[in-house]
Length: 444
Image 1: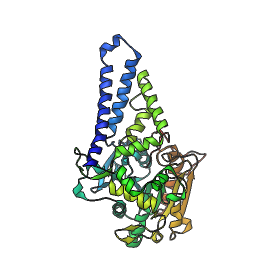
Image 2: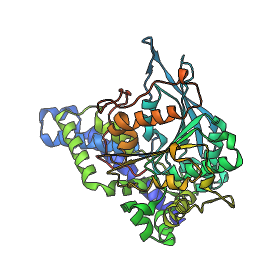
Image 3: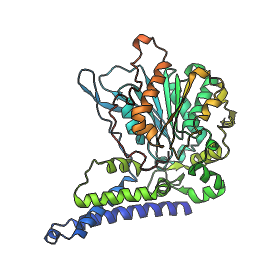
Image 4: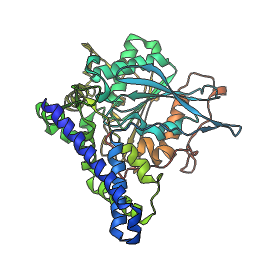
């Protein structure tokens, strides 16, 4: 009962702030106040608009809103989001480009389950669609999943990845971003032992904590400082009465958001003050960079308690993946069994979430993969967000990943896609929209 009370208390605070913002916006916008154009009224209205929008976004799942893909003959191809596999805790979805033949490259983009929806990778998906057939793991908000559906921990997550990769087939190229990187590695190891014919063609790991002890960050320090009992007591709550998952134990999205913002409070404060002043002066717009970024950043989801706690204990504290001691359903997973998968790691030199060294550790674990099928890339000057959705991804990393996929595709060279290697420090424009890159650290 205590957990439900605290969960509903957070929702009450959020709801109250949304209402206060809406009230301030409405009151300060009365036409009669135009007779006395005091600056405080414009500032009050601006504060209300920004506050209402910000707190409203926290409980809304963003839409994918993928723009049409330009065709070779000048036609735009509409993109449809279609489920391929539907599961209680997450779906495998396909971005079908209308009136276009399937692309030779098939990519499974494994989105993180760490507080934000898979739509956080919208720009990543948009950048890959012109050249690839794209599939994404679309994880569900735990607050909307009834208790009757049972548990969901990192072993279940890994099994979901195994099933999704097996469903897509051996010509799949897996790209795992941040949190799922070590679990994607484990999923490939399970397939290598149980169903070698279903192993993916390539596995690209981007900024993931394969070995958290390889380089300390604030995230790893927090995990080492807190005991599991204290973490469960402080972080875990029960879903409140207004959602379908009432009674389910979760790490609430609103609590996660508070920790995300606290990591860079000064940067976020300045961003919101600038936005309020912009609204008051009339220089802000609906689709500006602030709204594009924070509409996604503030939209958070609950994680099941067992997934959050098992991630902290087994990936960060015990380093089971890093020590090759991971167990799924009572059975040891041997990363060394991977042999027919080409593996690439990508890290950002300025990544303060998964610091350089944490992800590249995967290459040493894959003892069964020949050295010529391993590749690593360290992106200078890039932070965590930039290596998968920012300028660094668009201009440098994305072309390298596509070339890595092409080099390992099991098709004749005559029908392989054209190379996208960087020339003169620039790559072909992928059409992705700019985001607020690394001005706010997204803890994924």
